[in-house]
Image 1 (tube, helix red, strand yellow):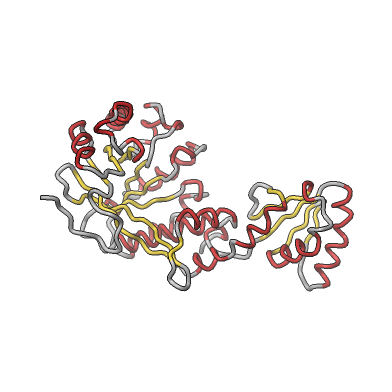
Image 2 (cartoon, rainbow, N blue to C red):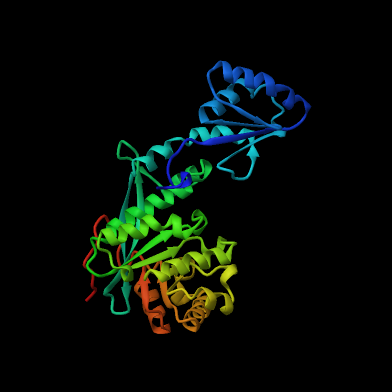
Length: 332
């Protein structure tokens, strides 16, 4: 059974009203909502209701409130100004995308130094009911605004595991957002079970931490990665940010793969500043026994320079763009 955060359930709104004027409106608002047949719970200066109630509350009370003293939250998240509540309503379309799993995985090749396909990164592609593409820079902010990142992340992971079953022994790099996982034992159970059901060898899967530099809770991340490792999976860090800059921290995480961000790859063959970053990154990866991977390669020149330095894996449009089917790829 999925937790409410991993499925598309009815949102619960907590609306907190501060100030004498706002608090004087509370009994009026409750009376109005109850007359509409809507449930509302009062606790101190906080009203709790579902989304239908929240929509009606805002329509009825918005012009009466001192909005700078009114705030709301969903799913026990942080409180926000009540003026942001309509944005949550406007992003309701994300629920339909998640509920109907309107996502497919595209495959982008990752090659070794001999240009043989070593793995594919599984990249999510979203569409609406009419088949129109929805871009990631639209879908993820929408999911975040409605507290649906957990549910969206799970759908993407499950879709990627199913797509990995089509591979012929190559590894599959599957992205996940560590902050979307409360407890790996519970939140990741369905993903692990699906891998077994589809015949995907755990050794074939590499779970890739996205936005790794934004993870504040290192112990939580270690717990998640330890859970994956104990079940035979590998993991990668997509970028080594400030939080992972020391050899000691990297040694604690012990990533199987470390990705050099594309901003340091484009033009690296002729940019001494980027070369310095790439060489430092390589030393860190080698120091903790991690396989270094350069992503975003678009030219032969950059590929050859990175290869000469000791990078082992490579990804970018030069080797292949994301595609709906995995490719048999080898450059002569």
